[in-house]
Length: 351
Image (cartoon, rainbow, N blue to C red; front, side, top):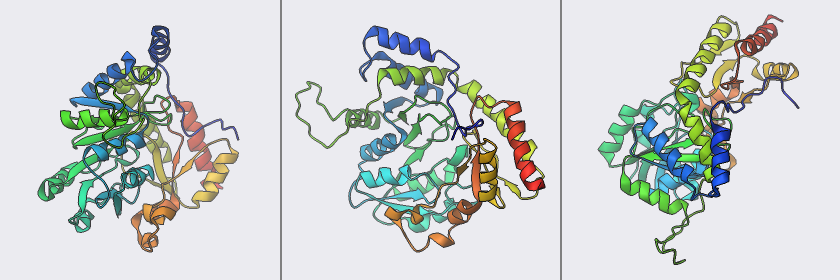
């Protein structure tokens, strides 16, 4: 169906078309084109990181990060229960095993429960900044130091949250804070890790391009056309984040005091405006009929068929997934749009 208020849509308000035209007219539209390096440099500088490695998606960014850190069969990676399944799949793609930790009331990984899941096989902790809420990274980094582990931040939903881990991985899918349609990027201060990720994303070609490949690698490259869009988006990131802060504020004000709605903790950056609701499924059906698109919360990883474990019904992640959802959230959302959406929510509960 066609929604008058879609849950997300990209904001292309900068020099995207100009840069794409330049990339096409120059003839270098592949991953060898100049915009890939321009985007990597700009995004790394914005985040205070030394190196950026662009790739084909947020999922491939996580996979590259884990591979560069030497994760493989027999290893374990600590992953939140409450996340999008790509976080766990990236671990599985390496042959390692994801070990899940339940969430706290802010939906982020419960830091107090991480240490009990560390074993001699643990190699990496992968916190995820859910819906734009920054994880409590200081104790995570302390644990990693104490146990000799590495940390990979899944920042797919958190552009604007400054990285502190060994590697941070961002998504550039069309519904993210900034986008290239598809794409991802890894940030690190370690030149060796950056070199490894760049090597692995490009089929592990040798410098002489001899077609002798010494390790299993991937075609996870970003095209220059995608990078042109991503560069233009990066140039607007400050203004995009400021606009989204206003969207969050308007939702907070408009939805407060509704009997049946539970507001969630503030976000460090707004990806999606998440909330909990009594009679959630009925509300979502009502909003759908009114032209307002919504999305459910993530399901616990231990409920997923590929990782099914009997513990899942008792998890906080399961409890939140039963009544949580999010409303339309994108940079182009106007005050009038939000007034319409909030009005429909209020109408549902008033009835």
